[in-house]
Length: 597
Picture 1 (tube, helix red, strand yellow):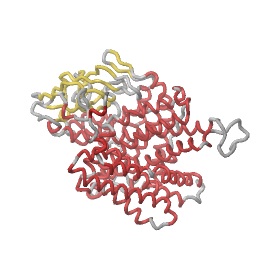
Picture 2 (picture 1 turned 30 degrees about the vertical axis):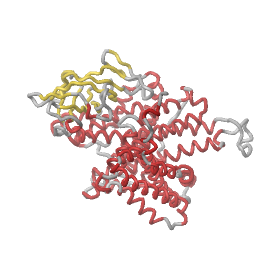
Picture 3 (picture 1 turned 60 degrees about the horizontal axis):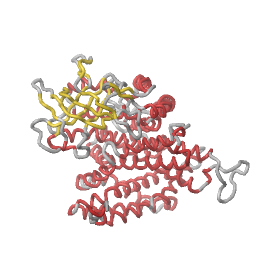
Picture 4 (picture 1 turned 120 degrees about the vertical axis):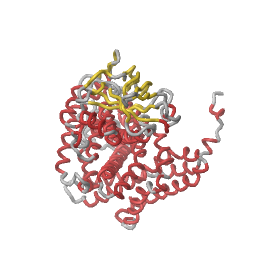
């Protein structure tokens, strides 16, 4: 049977030692937030995830959601767990106090999202979408809409969704057919069908607030004619009470590979009453608030799944007796050695450990900058942080979910045949992880977003929010003999990234296929360089703490960084070669040559 323990010590290392919580306290509103406060919150979050959510993970997967006559019922225990989630106040952690939120940093809720995702990935989707809808409405909603809807959304009584995809259009949302007809009272009547709607219908909340993109009669073709509407499941009276059922109903739920306790719905809008959010024809740009929130959340979800896969693979490798060490018995008092002595098992475990911990540093670096982008007083600092998050959002989403699937697969492999058996839990993590590479924009789309939008954004200003700190770090430490084995590989890999960036900038304007062909490799190259930089920062901290009572912990950080630099970072060489090969090998291949023959 699988188990889960929130990695609080590792989280503390990244938050307090690698980055420092003074970053948060320097922001308005967080001046009095002490480390002890954050520790207490995260301790309670860990208990909730370990004791309430994790026990429902396997049973929720086996039971799944039920659909009957338009009603979706979540698996046994989910409704009670969600009530506890709301009663404790987890839904309001980082929300605006104006609407009943606790006003804590987004960094804290990001850490909580990792824990939830490890404990119960299906459950995590319900608050994740509600949080995204909250951020969207707070940013672009009218005061009337915000005052009417946000308090119940913040309090967790009402959920939220993002309704974009239709059966004939996913990435190309300009093809959507959902229509919004204006009414004399200022509302709109929405008609159309949306698919793949996470938490579109369920029994956890009293109401569900759908954020729907649609086209008004005067909306031009393509994305420039799209507007955004708030469509509640139940209409809301002026006093905040629930009124009549709106024309937004669930037609069916999907039967999926993973996250089976998360309701993925086909939603029909039959002249459903909707309210314009933001300006007409700004629907796509406004929706990006929710899309980016969801993309970062899905990246964190990937981190959480990679973490629990590693924890259980490690426990199994220490316990499973099989064969003897290649250099002779390590545990002669036992019938066989535990499989952790075998080089290939250690390769898999170290890959899981290094990528998980690197992803955690990447996620929290991004979360801290997100807090800075929202709260910093200095306009230049706010812009720099916003630029950084624009750049990192596709990287966090794509790389953390790519590695989640890779690490869940490695976890199955560590278990051998037992990993393929349901009762051991590993195969569920593999199935649950696969969706992260697909929803909220496939990872191929994330790579295209990085290379096509983010690199040229601001005339290169955006990419400098990463290149600048990395270059400065290298210059500061490259002559430090104690850091040479870490900074040297970083410098080489960073050079490859710079060269690849210049090559793409040179070739892509005249042939967009060059950007498309390079995109996936470039995103992975970028992510690995980011990991290398963050591992160097972690090593700086760890080396100063080797004389402490936690020597083993800090030594582990140094050794994990060494493994990353010597065994994983060299992939950047191959990625750079692939990028330099250009689009020719892909685009010159004749369509007829794919077959069939």
